[in-house]
Length: 80
Image 1 (cartoon, rainbow, N blue to C red):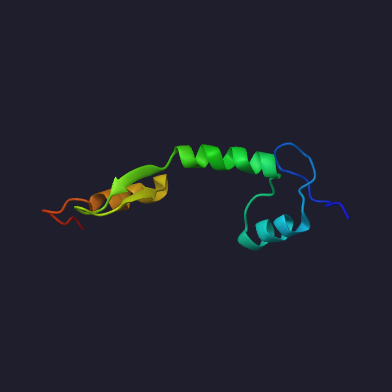
Image 2: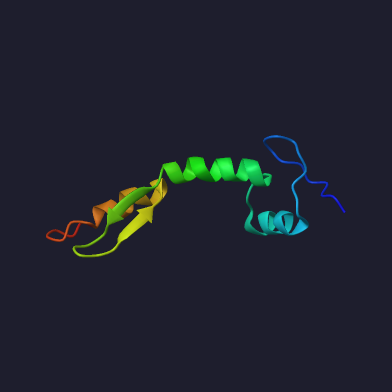
């Protein structure tokens, strides 16, 4: 049974039904697989790589969280 839910960007049906259910459950916009991949690629381009503490692992940080994470990266002086 084809999905009656249309992609917000291109207007094609969003399939499979499990994807539609997952998008609804997570509160994400209805995007088909191809438009969703494009949106994810744009979002990932804005991520920043930081090392929160000396000799620590590198971590990907989103733009929204970058300002808070980068405040705590100085080992010598902890900022509040």
